[in-house]
Length: 274
Ligand SMILES: Cc1cc2nc3c(=O)[nH]c(=O)nc-3n(C[C@H](O)[C@H](O)[C@H](O)COP(=O)(O)OP(=O)(O)OC[C@H]3O[C@@H](n4cnc5c(N)ncnc54)[C@H](O)[C@@H]3O)c2cc1C
Image 1 (cartoon, protein in one colour):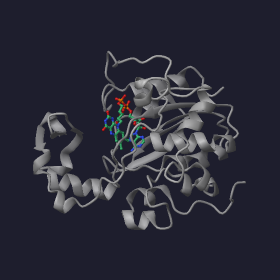
Image 2 (cartoon, protein in one colour; image 1 turned 30 degrees about the vertical axis):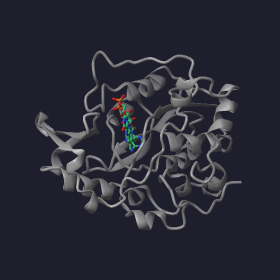
Image 3 (spheres, protein in one colour; image 1 turned 45 degrees about the vertical axis):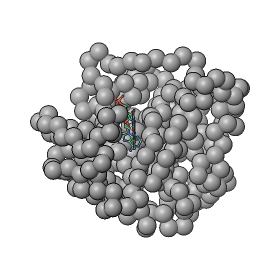
């Protein structure tokens, strides 16, 4: 049963709130997936991965089998695995833009009516603003990672109010878990998931703090990556690069801001349940 009481707060506020305020009344570990800000809030205890991880059951329902070998233990159940990149990278994409290209193509081919994807709050580079895209161009414009917690499932309220019955969702493992566990409430004809990996995540204010502490020019950072050479590579506007050794990160000032470690919660790259 859907609680018609309405969402607790708006998207913009959710994104910008501090962690303490945000997590009030939530499970101790919360990735702000947005479900609790939607009308599906009453289903949180039965869908939240941090309350009860149902990955094995969900995979069994979708694939009619369990993970079988060591590769699947790491990556989830798959039919085929490919390493690929776009021949012509999309502007502003995180890597080459495969994720937004797949979702845009679903709209171009008329296989879906809408895509839940994540743009940015106007005037910011990284504050995430999920929305329901209805055209390929809107999806392409949402390219690029906003490396912080994003309440994407809040947008399911927009889906329920709209005529969208064939939906694509781009999101992280924990969001995908909640969506798969709640999908029977949505009355969708078809659901495509384009999963993106996510192991650690932070709130937007904590991301700003992090960049201020580690970078000599936090406001010009367009992209950063934790690399295998034990350093963070920060890419700035106009192509400048900065490298910060892990050992030089002021952990004493950062506290516990990277608080989530949700590795590979069975993300299915693209899948239709029907
Ligand atoms: C918080 C976070 C941490 C990540 N950490 C890693 C990592 O350590 N290593 C790694 O390999 N990959 C990581 N990823 C995934 C990586 O960003 C994607 O795989 C990458 O964007 C794909 O590149 P692309 O050029 O194909 O995507 P693009 O075509 O640029 O599309 C990026 C897509 O990501 C979506 N998106 C952006 N920000 C968010 C968000 N906050 N929440 C949900 N969706 C979002 C957008 O809707 C867009 O559709 C992380 C993603 C997030 C959200």
